Amino acid sequence: MYAISAQDTQKLGEAAEGLYCIAPYPTRYEGLKTDFNKAYRDMINVDPEGVEVGTGKRFVLAYNWAVWESMFLLKAGIEKSGWKGNKDTPRLIETSKG
Image 1 (cartoon, helix red, strand yellow):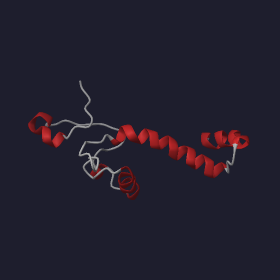
Image 2 (cartoon, rainbow, N blue to C red):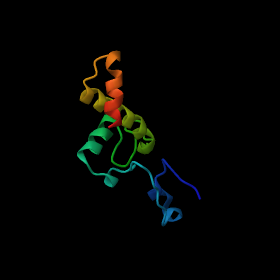
Image 3 (tube, rainbow, N blue to C red):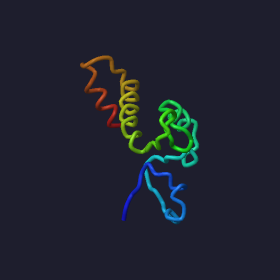
Image 4 (cartoon, rainbow, N blue to C red):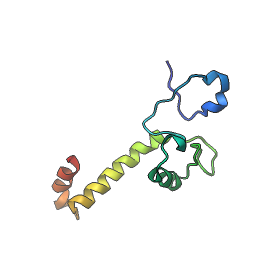
């Protein structure tokens, strides 16, 4: 068994026949057609095929997404808890747990 990432399975041709790639975030835009996904890809410069604009390298969004997910959780917690400084950290933590 082998898991592949950052591979263009269409270019592998017959060797990739019947191959499924399971990831927590799809490489190709067609796997998750949402306004949010489009905005995210635009923000990080990744085209609909999962290729980084400017470098031409295949980009594994599943690896990158985990980092952003933490930032979005922290941002939401700050906004919801009204965090302004260190003294508000306990409230931020409690808010983030919920």
